Image (tube, rainbow, N blue to C red; front, side, top):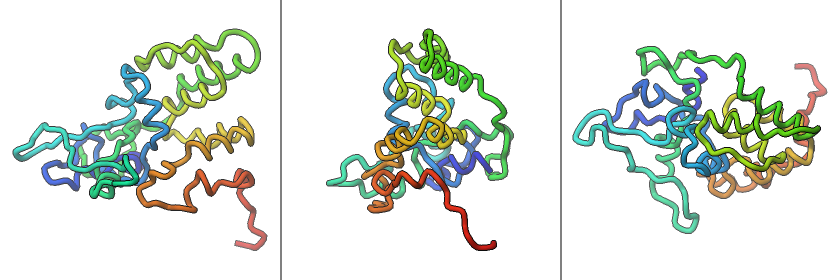
Length: 230
């Protein structure tokens, strides 16, 4: 059911049915945040948000508007005057991760595991870039190999944040981020979470004190061990 967690419930919109081309059937449980979407939008030639890793647009499949893009809901972009339809946007029209997209002919099934992550060559390049950056030599060819494959322009500078940003573009929703941040140390994880976790003030449910950017404490890096028998 991996794919379903990352795909929006677009099929609840009148005039569009669940179909493989638009991600199959989804739960709308997990979505890319503004940090990730802004990273992908930095380079207009980057194909990772162009129906390869992420789907940003959906289209009617029947009725008078068939094949037209669906634009009936809007995300929160202005806190002083939020859209009346933002709740429906975050339920039915938000960007979906389609890395684990279904490959069979049953778009109405949640129980689909077509693509299972085994090993990522791109991550090997990014690990090499980080290792060389921290030692000696030129890490740029390794990081740029990933960017070039994605159609993005090569970068000319590299630092720890550039590594983290490229790992976000390439490895998002593959279960790597938390372990990467912990490996890089307390200062890195504190900075990344307080600056980029969730959607901050734009979170659609207005969580307030539950916002991870303001609620994060350094000791959260460790999970507590219960002192009672389970």
